[in-house]
Length: 173
Length: 173
DNA sequence: TCAGTGCAAATACATATGTATTCGGCTAAT
DNA sequence: ATTAGCCGAATACATATGTATTTGCACTGA
Image 1 (cartoon, each protein chain N blue to C red):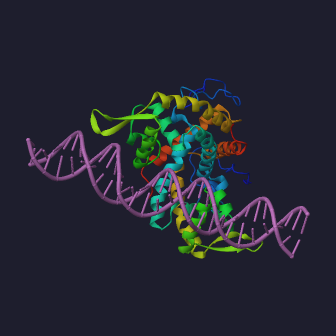
Image 2 (image 1 turned 180 degrees about the vertical axis):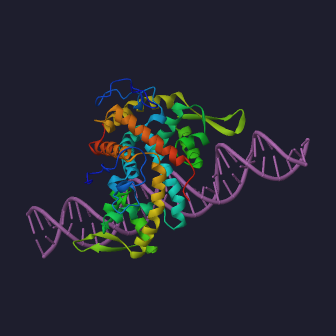
Image 3 (image 1 turned 90 degrees about the vertical axis):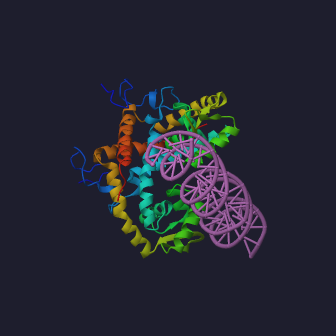
């Protein structure tokens, strides 16, 4: 019967099935080892753990790096927008930006359309730092994905996006 | 052809390819939207964000819940073992266990084989609390996985495990 | 036997995050 | 035009986490 490692529900594999078997944390046979969310946390943890050490040598903390990657995509960006993208509270981002200002990585200025909002922009030095870090991060990424085909990565992305979408809808109870 | 939504490396999809294209954070065309690690963090964040609110109504914080899920699998467990499984520093776990002791969720006793180690066990009350929480977590899980086949979940698990394995090897530089 | 080394846990201290509040600017209703 | 309410950011305060150190036990080798 069933019983294969993590996989093989033996059920047909058509579409959404009600019984999540061993994946479902409410099932008695559930094991952390087979929990998608546990494995996500684990992978994410290891990924950033290693990277942290390297980044620190360049004077960049993990949260600062996160903010920089957000700014690389959209610039300038408001404190609130950065907070949302970086999955962090506004107050925290506000303080991180302070540190980045001291380090000369970013500049801030009030949005001319609305003086309440603070727009943040990477300085040339900030961009330079980001460029210096890029190949390091790239190596870490390659290391993480070694032996995994681009096709599998695409599949992973689709599933993760679907999960994020699902969780974007109204919460439980 | 390939080419769906996030994918489209246009390259053949055989096995491991050196060029990770838009998935690679060191690539100029890279976008956070298509980053596996960003999406993992995002999914994990939303998943726990919602759950946190519910758990708090039952007097259980996120880290406490995490410890409980670890203990459900292996009991008793040492502080160090819990810390490793929960991806948290020992000192932090040590203090979390203190809180759990106060709440009567666990008991501790020195390991008779080695008096340095502290073995932690769920009390009946702790197990009861865990049982009460289980269906709630189950619902959250179902919500997250809605519309995703068990086959896709199995695929997700395989990929995540592979990534974790890769990152378990020696770090970069 | 016991000194030295190493490890697990606990704790003092430093730092970072979150929550609640404040400050100031925007907007809409009167 | 004035005021009440809302909203973004900043900050005071509380809490949680991590880092460095301490404490006590265990194992090893002289």
